[in-house]
Amino acid sequence: MRAFLIRSSLITGFIILLLAAGGVALALYAPFHPGNELFPVQNFSEQQLRNLYRDPVSNSNYLLDLVERRVNDLNIRTGTSYELISLEYLDKSIDQVTLAISLVSQEKSDNLRQRLLSLAQRANDGLTKLMHVPIESHTVYITFQSKISALMHMVSTIDTSNNELSLAPAISLGNQENNKSAMPVAYSAIGLIPFPPGSQGAIHAFYTLVGQHASLSCESCHNSGKYVSTPNQCIICHLMIQPFPHYTGECELCHTSVSWTDVHFDHTSAAAKDCRACHERDKPANHYNGQCSACHVAQAWNLVTFDHAVAGAVDCKSCHAKVAPANHYAGQCSNCHNSSNWTSVVFDHTGFTDCVSCHAGVAPLNHYSGRCSNCHDTSSSWANAHFNHSGFSDCTSCHAGNAPANHYAGQCSNCHDPNNSWRNAYFNHNGYTDCIACHGGDAPGNHYPGQCSNCHDPNSNWRNAQFNHSGYTDCIACHSGDAPGNHYPGQCSNCHSINSWLGAVFNHSGYTDCISCHLKDRPGEHDTGQCSNCHNTQRWGD
Image (tube, rainbow, N blue to C red; front, side, top):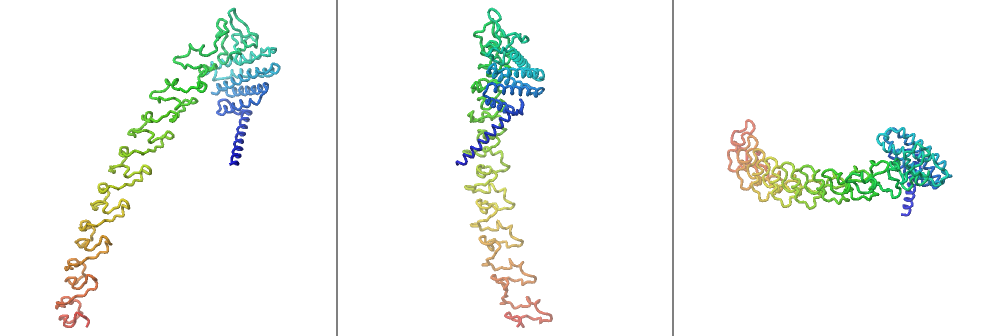
């Protein structure tokens, strides 16, 4: 057991090390671009590798490397359907690096700012080459363009004497963006008030302006020069433009300031569990009326898999009755189907005894009309039918059609045994005396017309026939056909014995006209008188 644990630990450690090495390789070499299926894995690895750079300068340089990658990605993806997602990743990387550089002291940040300015200029050049985003996502394009312009203006006009400068990524320049010496302004009751460059007011540090908020003028929010108590909750500004009925939660759970129409609801942050509260109006007619989460997942609405356990679904018919074919079993679906594999149908016959109510329609023509369970077994094979004859005595009511022509018309059980072999038939002759009524057709031509039992024994061998001659004297009535040509025409008993047919001895007692029988036996020129003149019956040759 100990060896197994050690081996398992080593294998687990090796796998973790391998995954870590793979992640580092992805972060360093960056082979994938936005839109590729493995890019999110690469991006995750890049973000994790950032944790290795504890020093603010090193961290900022690493994030500048990521910005450069994203600028290159944007150039590579220009002209493809991945322009927008490349722009989004570039936007995120710029936000990260501007925040990181703001944490670096002024004396160490000059080179960082210069490099950031160069990358911002490259990004701005890349924007002019985009083909899809300016048309399909024009608002996003204008917003990002404004952001880059503001960033370049801010970096190029930094007052290096101010050590408290914060490079917040979203700066509103009003209508002064073409004048590098101009400063962001806001209204007050006595007119315009300029903010010193790099001050908290100039960079709007108390409420970061990102996305479309970056393109707004100060007057859009600060009416009549009012600064204090200016609302910073989305709902206060957007309440009047939201449709009715609308979701009553926080706007940022669905919307972003980059693109108001790019709606994605964060179900996790909202702790949303009552799906029907929002989606009740979206479902089609005759839709399942339970919670959406029983079928749908927030990550992919069209990926539908019904979880019967979560929904507590036991009344299958309430949903599936409409999909059942004609003349389908009317009971619960769960008696045959399971939710894991709908097509794997096995009916649980436990408690069901009226088989014919379901199976009458599948029986072939002239099928046995009794219960299916008399022949079929639901626990084994339906095709392996075996009829239980216990309690059944009228065999011919079922098997009359199976009998061949001229078959015995009595009960099958007189010959056949249902518990043995049907073909191994044996008739019980006890009580039957009129044998010829059945066996008359079995006798050969010119057969003895009397009862079969006079010669045959049904309890012995049918072929070993022996006639009981007791009481019979007219032998020739039966055996005349057995005599050869020119045979003695008298009674057989005059010569033959019933004990041995071949040992024939004629009793000449009372017979005097020998020549009437032996005329043909004498040779040529024989004496023409009676045989008894020369011969005697004891010894013919003497």
